Image (cartoon, rainbow, N blue to C red; front, top):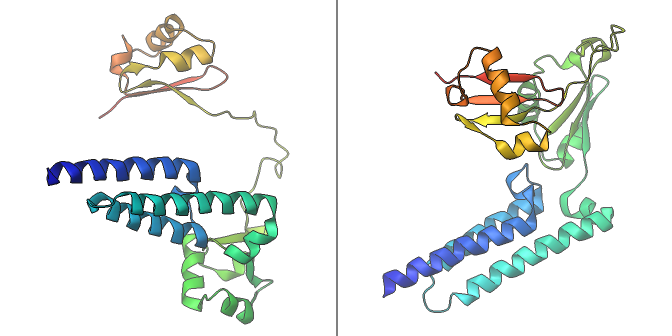
Length: 224
């Protein structure tokens, strides 16, 4: 009987976590800010307690709901009143600009030189002279504006006008035709079979991944 209770409370914990996670949005699986970080950890801890609470499981469940609702309300308030975000999560801080490092701003951000250099290297900048401005964001990332002469050349710099690329849609996955996606693109399996034959394939089963863009350009990939 006790084993069954553990199973039921564990299932309840998973379901509650899933529902609360969906309500809180994708921020909980993205780069977290300070408030989302502590909320996520707390809800996870309560969920673990709920999984083994056999006497009064409604108590940790209620606590999870309170934290979840509070997080959703905070998110709504931050969207309505941006000033709240400033006090809850902080603001971006300029760490480096015009060849000078701001000691005061580094102190505010609680960032030391070693960490700053590490973040620069992770962004691909080993030479600080290539950096015009470095901003330490409130979620712990470093945004870098390179010196104009060091940034990659763009088609506009070369007076070129390339055709705009579009997002590819998967139309074959693991040998299975994604009929619903083909239909949304205004295509059908007859058209797909023609594309397969044109590239030397007999059927979709020979293709591990098939992609198609808005211009009906297709790419087929086989698995090793």
